[in-house]
Amino acid sequence: MGYFSQLRYPTAWYAKLVIAILALTFFGLLAAAAISGYAVYQIVSPTQSHSDINLQNFPGHPEKLPYSVAGEGQRDGWFFPGLKTAPSVILCPGYQSSRGELLTLASALQDHQYNVLLIDFSGQGSSGGRSTLGFQEVGELRAAMDAVANRGDVDAERFGVWGANVGAYVALSEAAIDRRVRAVAAESPYGHPKDMVGILVGRMGLASLPLVSSMAKWGFGWINPIYRNVPPLRLRMQKLAGVAQLYMESPEEPGLSSGSRDLFQVSPIPHELVNLAHGNYAGMMDDEKRNYENRIVSFFLANLPPSGSP
Image (cartoon, rainbow, N blue to C red; front, side):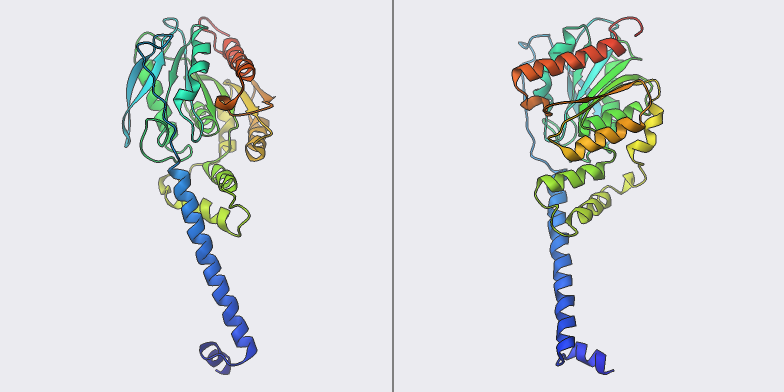
């Protein structure tokens, strides 16, 4: 009884010490929860970069292609027509990026007769909503592919997908369940959206704070309960058997680079891993961009030719 009395009315030094430790622990947990909550809010509501073009005057004669995303409403992609009955390549931008940054890559692919579609995911560019770092975005990619397949002037059974970080996770996830995807070029993919949460918390400079990263991952899962049972991508990689895969990593993002290597190591053939001097296509210098485009185009030409079989 004396001990509990000391906790209520501390007079002894040890009781005061215990109460001080409990108070510091409580307020430390409270601070970590508040910081991680703020981090999660910033992650799912990223600053959007919006690009718009005059489709009527843009080279390649692009046109808007409307499609509907369940629960998210109407969207539109920029469709660059290639050879009739040729396969289509969908370009999926990365986190805090947008389709407008991929126009030259789209043109490079269209020049080789591919049909090309540029899209924005939720929380990107022209699209509202919030990012789930790949969970719901898989359905968005599928809706865009369905819209392309329904045009009637493309090969509805052969698609290629390019993506960076979020887009790369989405591309590989869709390829694992959709046999229409025959080739995937994935730059800096990760194994699970929670992995990206940890990386983004690190970019904010908050990863060194105790518990913040783990609390942020927990909070991200808490606001996305319907995706609780989605397994890590590495457990689904064998479903990519027969799908050509190009994995690209950059030393500028150690977390994403290790994720790319891990996925490559458990992926089935045909696959290849390329180390890039610099990632982030939009931020590359002109020569780097051209080399990158040539690599992507060569990959799709070898594994998803505009006509015939590879």
